[in-house]
Image 1 (cartoon, one colour):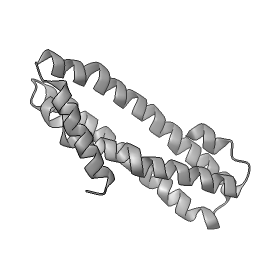
Image 2 (cartoon, one colour):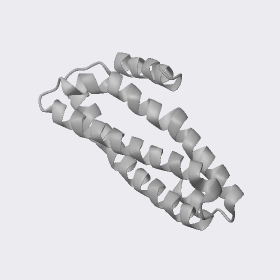
Image 3 (tube, helix red, strand yellow):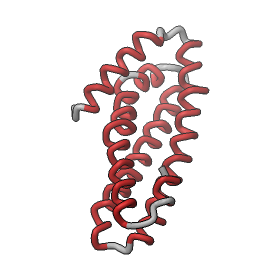
Image 4 (cartoon, rainbow, N blue to C red):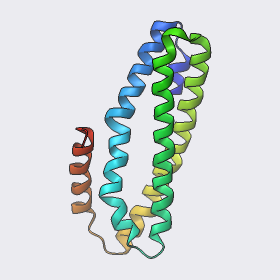
Length: 141
């Protein structure tokens, strides 16, 4: 997180923090986003007005992906970069991603999921489908 990155006292700590952050993005966050796009979002897109909500959620996934790429590039450049400058950049990127993700998750939890329930979509099979899609995405598929 931005807090973990900003507390690093030297280059090795920053390298470890960026490695952990990049692993989280690669293994958890981005596969979760891909799973949502394969399972929950098609159901949401079928709702009246849902295609606009889903389009905005997908745009947020792309923006999160761009932040993940920026963190990876920063980690790759760290051996030859000024580590204090890189630390500030990493904290800024991470803080922006955290803010974006917070709003994104609220839209899913407070708008999309209730709309699906209201439309009579059975969430249990939808969420099971999402778990399967997450496992596939996490395995690189």
